[in-house]
Length: 261
Image (cartoon, rainbow, N blue to C red; front, side):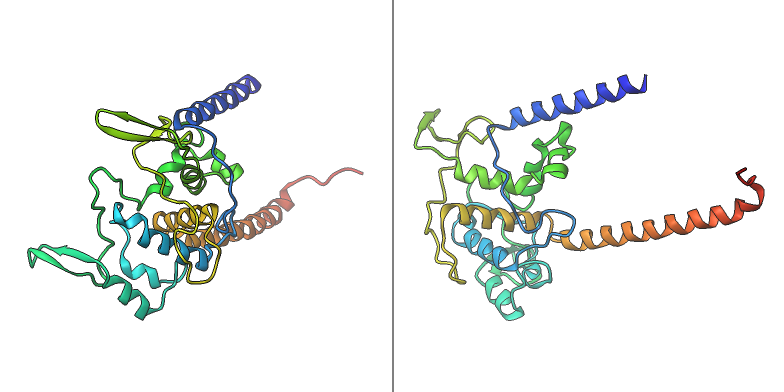
């Protein structure tokens, strides 16, 4: 009975994962990122390059309304200096309800929302796009294979073809990774779109991976802290298990019959 239930459960998980994958679109490449695995960490230089891509390309249409500007200088993220973070914040204008007008952004403000109608906010994009792995977004493929939102974003940005079509006055661009195969957003990365401050060569793949890593950080800014807490918890539970075992063995030793030789 137990064997049948196990086989049934594994079959359901496999079919569910396949269906979710098919519903999301085409093939997603498993790119490697520094923050994968229980001991992975964000690459500070990569996050800074991703911030540069977002600022110069993505922010024209998309916003990051859930990300406070001050987090750019916090540990575990891009780690800009306090002065650089404040100078960066001043490049934005935000609407102040008290003034009923726009003013220069402060570190306590969040990134502005997107300005292009219909352009999704990118704050939680990396987490939102992890839902196609496993049945009902359980993240099984992400857990076992390291596949998730950053891989989807990178694959999506690199999958555009030269084909276009027009429907109801809107131009669509072919992208096999997108759920419908056609994206309203045109290709954004072409290689050498930016001149990286750290001298890294700005190839299309490098740019796509950098912005994907940055968007992962915007969705999970406390990822490193959670991993550290998880590792400490596992170690603590391991030590506690050993202590409980030894305690149990000592308490019950007088009442257990000795083995006959």
